[in-house]
Image (cartoon, one colour):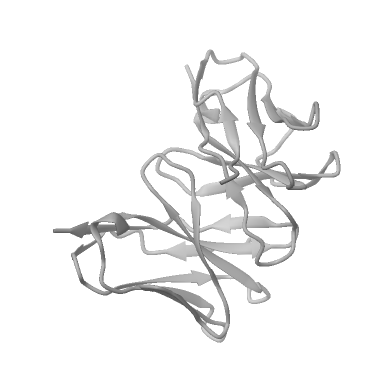
Length: 109
Length: 115
């Protein structure tokens, strides 16, 4: 059974802080991952794809560690608007996505 | 910006009734999906659909469920004889391709409440 596991949080951080989330996956053959963001009672929205070499998009950096089977997301200079649940997502053949349970982030003024 | 649209936004139904959830995928997308999220739980894959047939389905997607593309724009999920445990947010999604790294775009969801 394919599993994606995340610390549910919540992570409570002040504005401007740097925060990091990790996610572990069980399927060693998995090739592709994403971070999605989900606001309360809304649909998941793609934040960024995760590549082996790591990738950065503004304040967000994603990293994949295949040896240890974990994915990370780093958010720098946190904004109030970053408050949301961050979903670690594994791509499976046929574009079937396996979602983690999400990590809740609350950025406080 | 093109988006996936779902109707209705909220559906309340009595246990045992049939419901049809409707979705209009993004127009040039070829792959369509249904996911569900029970309150407080993970988003779970139900089914994927391509070229007018089911490509993949999860163990959740049993005989109670069916999908259809009745015309060139709509994609529906039918739940027969609803149960209390079918109460969840149902998300439709679509993508251009099915290869690794392709973004799936999600609709805003239909909240189904079975009473």
